[in-house]
Structure formats: C-alpha cells, structure tokens
Length: 173
Image (cartoon, one colour):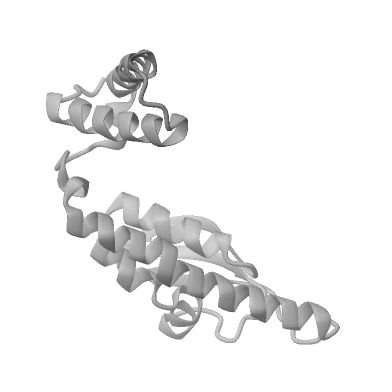
C-alpha cells in the first residue's frame, strides 16, 4: 500500500474544501465546519490517488489561469468547431462520413495531461478515445473518428488534437 504524504493530504484537503464552498455557497459556521470535516475525510482516503508528486503545483495562480483559459476558451472553441462540423454532416444527409479507428501519437508525459486530452477528444463530437497505449516509450491513443482523412500518424493526430495538446502541456506539465 502506498504511503500518503502530509503535503498530498493538505493539497487534497484545500481543493476539496474549496470545491465544497463553491458547491454549497454557504458561509455559516455550521456549513464551514461540516465542509472541513468532510474534506478532511476525503483527503485522508483519496490523496494517494490524486497527488503523486509536487503536491502544491496546481495552486500556482498562473497554472489556474492557464487551466481556466484552456477549458473556457481553447476547449470551447474546439468543441464549437466539432459541433458545427457534426451539424453540417447530419443536416447534409451524412454523405461526408468515413468512420474508422486511427492511431494518434501523443507527446504528453503527465498522467493528468493524458487523461485530460483523452477526455477532451471524447467530449468533442465525432471522436472517441478508445484506448491509451505505450509502445517503445511513445504514448498512442486509438481514436474512433467520424471522418478518417489519414489512417494514423502526425497528420491524423494534428487534425484530431488541434491545439488541445499544446495547451494541456502548458497546464499540466
């Protein structure tokens, strides 16, 4: 069993407590005390799953602003473009559909960044991340894509990932 460090528990507690306050939006002493107790319990049991190293790296204001810009700006633009493309395909009689599975190289090292990219790809219409593999030190995603233009490689990766990978590298690595 993996030992949990105090900084990991503290960072998880702070994040959980901030989330509690955002969800309840109550500042009565009773709510704050219950939130602190629940957040501490959550932190004690889950810190080892969330924090692996550098417990306080995400509390950097620049990282938080970059993450907000990514999820509320960059990702929303990519999401809009994918929805627009899917709407054109649907209302155009689904003529421009060439579905298939492509092997996409990914250059993200952090597990968090890889998970965020896989989720972002899956959330955009027309693509689903099916599997993440590592072959000879290189990470690959197998993505089901509604319009396979290139069967694999950098070109397919650039078309699917867009600017998401570049921005996730800034946030998570």
